[in-house]
Amino acid sequence: MNASIATMAWLEDAWSRLLQRIAGNRMPHALMVTGENGVGKRLFANALAGLLVCEKADMDAGSPCGICKQCELVAAGTHPDIRIYAPEKSRMIKIDQIRALSAFAVGSPQVASRKVAIIDRADQLNINSANALLKTLEEPAEDVVLLLLQESGRPVLPTIRSRCQSLLIATPDRDQAAGWLATAVKAMDGDNRPTPEQCAKALVLAANAPRLALEYATGEFISLRDEALDNFRHFMKGQLTLSEAAKPFKAMGLESALWLFEGWAGDLARISAGGQPRDAEAADMLTFLARNNPSWRAHELLDAIHESRSAGVYNVNPELEAGRLLIAWQKLMPRRRPAAG
Image 1: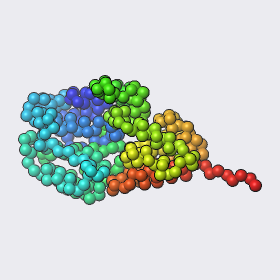
Image 2 (image 1 turned 90 degrees about the vertical axis):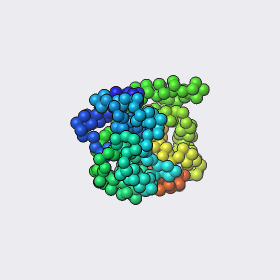
Image 3 (image 1 turned 180 degrees about the vertical axis):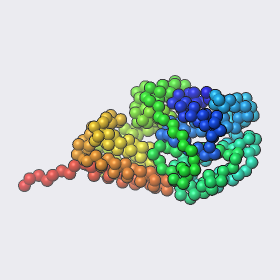
């Protein structure tokens, strides 16, 4: 078993399925790895890239040798035949990056027998960069493997998806996620370790995605989320202006704000269907809204959130998007009837 994969037990099933493809000489030239934010897709892709360039890899066990020149370069993070393309200053992967990928794909490997290109957030390709990628996918070189990473629920052009084989990484259960998070926190400096309470809360907010939970537990997200929830409640009751209510959502960034709104909308749908919400601290407000609205209103909210996420590729204003969604939420509040004369 690959050492880095072994640290995340929930990756082992997807890794085993991939090794079966390799053993059957069915390793595709393009693989779409799909999973929730924070489940370890990038680590999975990095491990696969290291395995594919290793000179003496044990393909049955899925382990690189760790001692050849290729493995030394991988360990140092300087292997010239492994390239990573991800959103940089913007929220999208630009066409110039894909042109660079295309040039890399048709060139000869520098030190290994093959090249590996990782597209981290293939769902963040804009229309121009996606179209530019199509030619490389349609006419792949024999010595290149493309690994495209996609967050679950984030759209990828059908023309891109149809040219890739797919591999799904499942989200771990709570015990697996909590165990990994506890180990990661234990390895941290004592002064910076989050408390067990913070870790438990981070796991809930991250829906058991371990790496995202670690990011939440060690960053400002939890405090910003608590402020956002408080502002959300007051805004829904007409006790706070839109601009004031939107401030913590803006501070956490558009992607985190949309993740939070999406979680609440999902909980609203679950409550409407008779289920239990994941975010217990927001349950009172969401239960009230579920009692006063038809169930389809939750799906309207989810559609609005997906529109904001699509617009985010084009660097929209996070505060304006948060405000737009807050207004959509406020429309779910029952109107007060005028007092009888």
